[in-house]
Image 1 (spheres, rainbow, N blue to C red):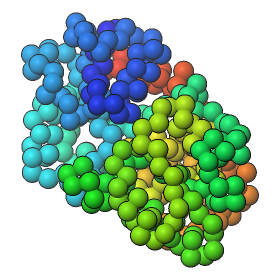
Image 2 (image 1 turned 180 degrees about the vertical axis):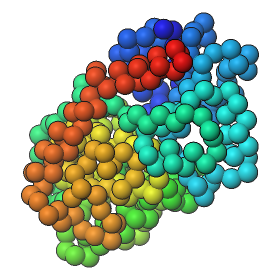
Image 3 (image 1 turned 180 degrees about the horizontal axis):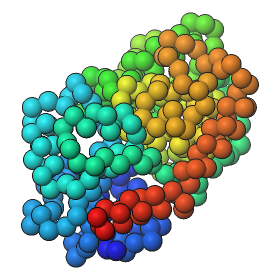
Image 4 (image 1 turned 90 degrees about the vertical axis):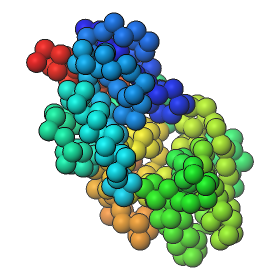
Length: 310
């Protein structure tokens, strides 16, 4: 089967996701050739980049990573309804997203979690990684690698990502006497940077590291914290366990499918698991083996084939 995999080319996770699918799928995959049996729209907001005549004549799968109910209004609803007439089935990575979009479509919604590329994400020595980024030896390093600020003004918090919760969590740890140091990377980190500066909490920031550096940054962390309100993944709930980095997360996206229950937290709590941290790290690692790219990609192939043959 021939698949046209439309990626947004926005230097975002979807671009890498599309490349990994091309390299590992059993199907013939192209990002440029619309001579295909099925169109996979990897980023739903880019659907108008595909000519309507092709959308009408092919089987179409659209991935919806996540939606923010507070932002899903008027124009977004109308755009969803307009696109829906060309879509045969939706792919979503988690139940949270499936439940939300089911209010707006009668089409099939298939839940298939993201995969994890173990060629990219692997454990490394924590002390050596801390030294690489000149992190203080006696500090408790907390990581956050996703954008937290709205692009419209570069100061307002992107609330679905929970940067306010993350900062409250770190501030509470500091008030409890923990020698905290925050490690940041990625675009649009202004909100957290401004708040950490205001509270005199030390941090290190690397704006656009490559994937190899991001891996070693995970490994430099004593804890990675996800404070999100809405997510598709997030990718951190796969990447942190793959690097055997301790992680805690709100119960969003794929978190409950990957992380031990002890790692799912209310953001008002400290990281105090009921079992030794080494146990949760190993359990999380064992859980994500089920999402290994080389095997998990077959679940996507099977879904596309079933839809094509229907």
